[in-house]
Length: 247
Image (cartoon, rainbow, N blue to C red):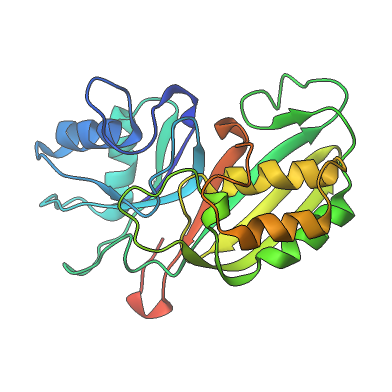
């Protein structure tokens, strides 16, 4: 099932005791709709304050409702800042995280001398003009399979910091800068640490050579500073076509 959410009110996707999370709200709504206690798994466990337009989740249910009816009915029980968008039935061995080919994230920056009420909570305000051309040159270092340890703030149980980045680029339209990044998977805070360093490049505080040196140092947390969570949005999760997912 594809879901979207405004993450500002939540402490991330993953369930946490006595704290509002996306997973808890989804499981609560499913229980109200079906009477079943279902564990919801996400393709990407977004952090506190991070948004999603294309999060994909899976869960087991005995409900006989059609996917379309299930989505409409589930939205009745979900809070206004979370919405189910589409659903389909899958094989019993489908794993929403393991079977994903790639995840796509956007980070939005309002590059303006004045704030905007309409961008508040969804775009990070950077008042000084950014050099998008030089930032995109730095992005070229990111594409490919590399050790991205310098762009992670913690590892947890991760055994490897090597990731394959398929795309990394910035675009600008009417003062709104969007950093688009696609990879097989991401390290904790990888996108936010990457854009934090790219902003320093765009402001002339870090040169291309230093950017590359930081990346090649493979030192945990070296990239920083971590950009605010509210500018980040999970936009899409991609799966092999042979799985036949109709979402």
